[in-house]
Length: 207
Image 1 (tube, one colour):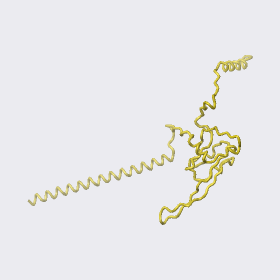
Image 2 (cartoon, rainbow, N blue to C red):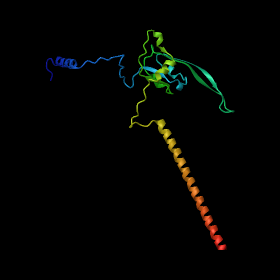
Image 3 (cartoon, rainbow, N blue to C red):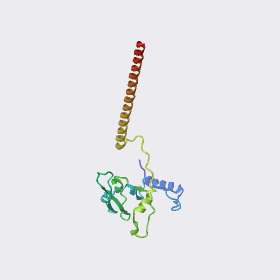
Image 4 (cartoon, helix red, strand yellow):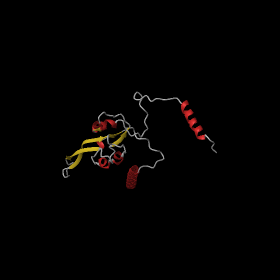
């Protein structure tokens, strides 16, 4: 049951608790802040994985990703094979003055070419300088934290489970083939031993 002035008493209690706590000042930039593991600072690019599929640029709500590429013809690997063409990345830039840090581009990338980096110190005096090219995005790749460890109780990914089943099936087939080879060798050895013994017996009878 509340009594008159209960709210005021609670408010004063919070004020008193706050007054007795020690004040801590963040000594930034001399001391860097401790960021959460999944901080969204900037988007880093691992250009070796980029196939210029344009999914990130098409799905971006702000259209702040600019990609240029050209096609390159690869020679045929075999005499009767056809020459192949591939897309070669010429430009990959992100305008961080437009980016809303939604992370859609990272989610839709099918080849793991984009990653979140906790780097946040990239302020510029000119808004036009917030468009960073692939060289800068590649530099931020070195600040991307390692992925967290998997939960031991988590379900195994389907890709790994399928690969494991295929590997187990191949291992079982190889083991069965090796066992069959051993049995064949043992049977051949037994037949050879029997033939040798029979020949020896025949030779004894003739003597």
